[in-house]
Image 1 (cartoon, rainbow, N blue to C red):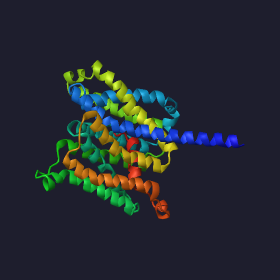
Image 2: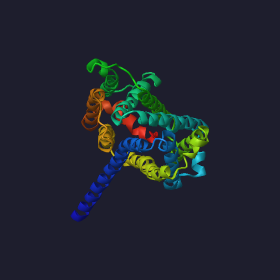
Image 3: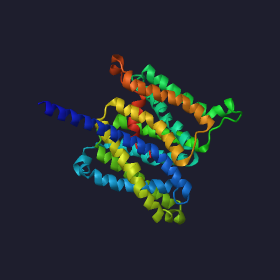
Image 4: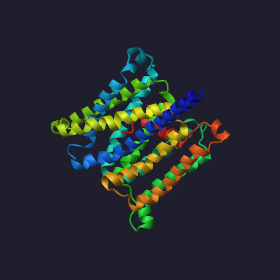
Length: 343
């Protein structure tokens, strides 16, 4: 009996380690994605431009995801989706796989990895602001979450104005930074649609439909840009790199995250997702030798405090009052973010 008990304990420990490794793989791949994108774009901007990368990577992601999720792709499951839900699925797909990724990747082209990491945190602020408004104040964040969101907002604003306040420069916001903010608004809109209207949609069909909409759209955009631009899409170098990019930075992290949400505890998920901010900046330093500017360091310091605070809350700060409260938190925003296709 003792041996059986020990064997059972070993199996549970092994499963727990596996679960943590799955969420860790998802976060690491998503954090590395920005640096790999910029490395490819810097190496050959004509071939590895925003539209080509999105078009090719989503094509590879669509094919590999369809193979992996083939059991979920049945007509009977598709018929389970009501017409109203399908309409919201279309709107959410436009935001999460067309407009959001397009502005996001254009922002990646024009901004440093550290700047991208700071501004991407705006999504959690937008979400915390939107939920009480849409619910007519029926869903309110906890004081802890509100303070964390305020710190993030101060950090983002500080990134823009610190040049004038501390370094004798001029406060401004670049085009690339505006693109990232717009992308965050799109992903927030998609997130709100997912949490309100798509909770009962079959995950496999949801994933494939979004990827299909994005793939078709970017092929259409490439064709509309002219024959010369469209011909650049059929480049062997592009597809050679997009083969691994689409698998390891579209399909694998998405499926790892979906598995993690079903097997990992909330503190593990929250901790891992909040650490993505730090990991993403570190990858930028290691892969691209891209160091944060003084302005980003000023703003990022406030966001780092918010990240640490969110991790502490997830692991040690939950009270009975928090359990009864409808949660609007950094965890919820970030956990849905990957499923909404931050491309």
